[in-house]
Length: 119
Image (cartoon, rainbow, N blue to C red; front, side, top):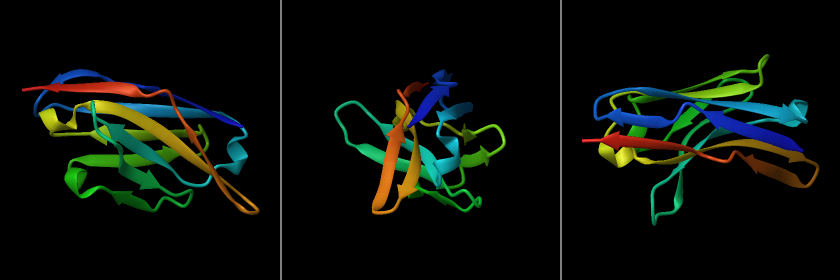
């Protein structure tokens, strides 16, 4: 089992920045990819950014050039630096971690961090 706890959400004006953090505990040696999803009210949960254990990254088109994902494997943490925030970035942001096993992989989720961007 892997437990994930996010921090760093809050209220920010458009154009501002926030950094989300997520710490993993439990069976951390099993973790492969980590990343972030966002879910706005009444909408589906969408992928924001991913990072593999080797450091390869991938971003949603809507955040490319504004958001940056990073990872500290020694501290079992993943970060999301969000710059030039827009009101449409307002959502709950969920950290996830994938743990592969013989027949597939298990995805673990954090509890979510609210990000609100005012215009």
